[in-house]
Length: 533
Image 1 (cartoon, rainbow, N blue to C red):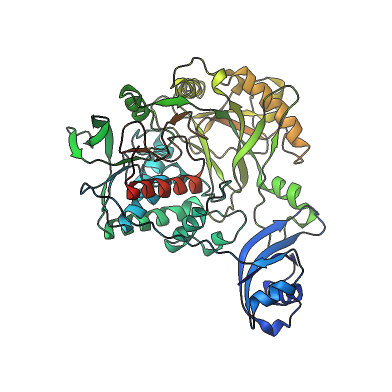
Image 2 (cartoon, one colour; image 1 turned 45 degrees about the horizontal axis):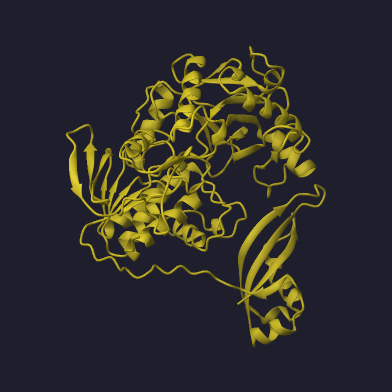
């Protein structure tokens, strides 16, 4: 198979032109192209007057492909390399079932691989199955009565279930293709396999999650929802079992010698339990800021120019980063075109925000996190959990500033730049379903963060026209973009306690759906290899 990069089709063109373009690149007749599949598709809108789709395609041709490649002196043409994932051999000797704690992306893929290897994992999830979880989240938005065990952060599917469902990642690990393949197998749109910016959308993710659960069960795995890990039983430096508490009932011990901890970035009580058990944990940098909302039409105009209404152009996105002179870096994260800002609290008496979009991305507003990095040297103390407690302090302040009922505090960008409290909205209507209360967000965020946000807004406005418009809305705080701790593990993916495998975003080894899923696969492989220090 031959891969051809950088085939360009105008906005008003047609993908049926691809075989002819591929043949031209190879200098062969079009009829010699036997098959063609799209490997990657992206949009180049740097020249607003000439927006184009850019393709990488894989083709098979009649005749000797190696010979054709040897005489095709085109740097955009190469032999296609397809990374196919093969589950490693199961070398595990133990007869105990491995336990997977958490069924977010890391836990889902760890459980899926263990189940396929015949190990019949027990999956423990503190929240509800995704169908009931959706109802709990809806009820919270309507009534503002929080279920601290099943919410936007906790429950089947993890925090990513209530997000844009972005599947792009900076990781170059070959397992990422397997992650996308499994998502498609379980109901995600096939386009995620070739889109340069793949996403599933919160409305489609629930079905994907449910399908993955059903496969784990079909292969002999077991799921226990509304069940919290409360203790890890350790003897002679090795895991002997776990203590589980279901629906507030009396705790029960479960014997096992392998525990994959895929707890997510918000399970603070579990992190505290690990710390008190003596599991090595270190501070880790994380970010703080707020969600910024604009009219999606404004983002479309800025990114696409006069072509912004073209039917082939979807809701535009952006990704901005800058380093204001003399300050920390500022950047946007988890941009949600046509999306919604949501109150993503998981602890009573706290407010934290996140963003989500449905697959169609057809909402009135665009939103993203506007964040500033906080390094451990700027934490309040050298305690391993200081960053986690710092997060909580900001979220508690936000709860009080919002009125104490999960209304989120918000400020217009113009007022934020002037250091003033907002008193009236403009033409950007906040989408947070628990409502917003206008105030001065500087009252809850550290001064070093707000100063950098202000400088970043001004600089980003030169990158994306209108980004710092007065009437854009900042809703805060955004504190959960990543974990503030790292649970240390060795080359065998285990802590100093043999058989304990910290995994994914909550353990500090991932940042997003795909990287967390990849880490889940790697931890499952470590269990299958049965190696120890």
